[in-house]
Structure formats: C-alpha cells, structure tokens
Image (cartoon, rainbow, N blue to C red; front, side, top):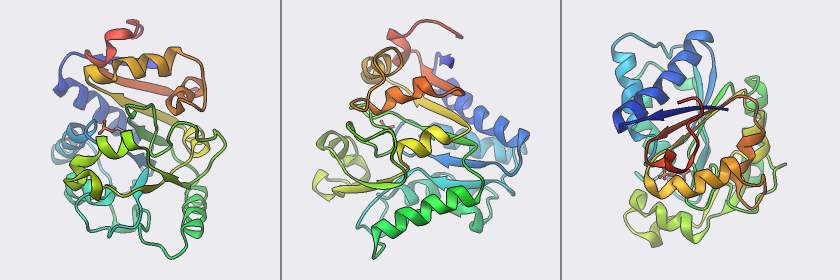
Amino acid sequence: MRIKINESQELFDQAAAKVIADCIRKKPAATIGLATGHTPKGMYEALVQLYQDNQVDFSMVKVLNLDEYLGVDLNNPGTCMSYLTERFYKHVNLSKSNIHFFNSEADDYEEECRRYDRHIEMVGGIDLLILGIGYNGHLGFNEPGTKFDTTVHVEKLTDITRTANTWSFGEKDKVPTHGITLGMKNIMHAGKLMLMVNGKKKAGILHEAIYGEVTEALPASVVQLHNDLVLVVDADAAAEIDNIGK
Ligand code: PGA
C-alpha cells in the first residue's frame, strides 16, 4: 500500500488526478473505473485542468461508472451518470463509445448486471479503479455484509448511505432505495486501486479499514488484500493512520 497524505484540499485533488494521468500516460488506452460523491469532486476539476493544459489525452481511454442508482431516469441530476457527465465527461476528449454506464431503468436488472460483467471482461479488465469510502465502510454500493465474491449486482442501500447522499437528490426520500454496483470481486480484480478519503469524519472508518480485521462486515477492509493500492488522503482523514509513505 502506498499512502499519499496531502495537507490541503487542493493538493489532495491534484495528487489523485495525477494518479489517473500517470496511468493514462503509461497506457493510453487504459480502462478506468470512476467513483462519484463529495470526495472526488475537486479531483475531476483537477483532471479537466490537466486536460486543458494538454497534460493528458483521453482519446483512447475507456471509462466505466462504478455504480448507479436504480429506478431513476439517467438524466436526473442526482444520478452518478449525471455527476460524471457534468463534472468530467463533457469537458474532456473521451470518445462517447468509450463511456460505459449502467442502465438505471433496465427491464431486467439481472441481465443488466451480467451485461456489465461481460463488458469488463471484453475490455480486458479494469486497469485503475477509483474508490471512495462510505461512513459505514462501503465501497461503491457494496454495503456492509456484501460477500467478497460478488460481481456486478443490485444492492439495497442502507439508511446511512441514503442519508449521506441526500445532497444528490435534494431530499432523503427521493434517494433511490437500491443501487447497482461493481461487486467486491470486480473491485479486487482491478489492476490498481486508488482509494480517496478526506475529512475528519472519515478518519475512524479509514483506520478500521486499513488496520482492522479484513471482514465482509466492513467492505473497505478488503483493500488490505490488494497488491497495488494507492491511498490518497488529506491530513484530517489521515489523523489516525501512521505516517508511512508520506
Ligand atoms: P462521499 O461518498 O465522497 O460523498 O463521502 C463516498 C462513498 O460513499 O463512497
């Protein structure tokens, strides 16, 4: 595990954007899985800036969304697809055909899950997967208790997750009850993981995830078993972790 601790929000955003840009420089046709949420907002801004400064070229890059809400129109501003389109996709030279996303209103969700799994296989796997951590230790929409051998699947969202994501839909009652997500196995099969964590409120769960028992009760603890993990944190989130690799 490599840990990059950043003293300011700006440095945090830039450090995370650099991990993505470095991956693309090494492999211009890389497949990158993308998270949403409060945590990576500034990282996407930094990435768009790198693109505008001609520091990174997305023309051959393939992206796929980590998760999505179910039963809501993809154009709803609260969806993960809207978030990524508004903050990232529409500002860079990604080819439309290289953006893979969930059908949030599929007739058959089981088939939608298998379609997504097949796509990951077809592109030769995920080279770099960006992740945040939930207050309950979830990864993507893999809520506590999710089996480590799951592939893409539908999850019932916990109350903690729906409350934390109220900002996306304006009111908690409007946050969908279910999500579709890469599974724990898909996550662990990615070539490289970047876990981004910021803020004091995440310091405890982060500490538990990286130093505690590896358990399905705390999905993020699985990252301890990945052999290429880069942890990008700010000083607040890092309050309880050792200064290794600072
Ligand atoms: P957040 O979400 O960045 O909005 O805290 C992270 C997550 O739920 O994975």
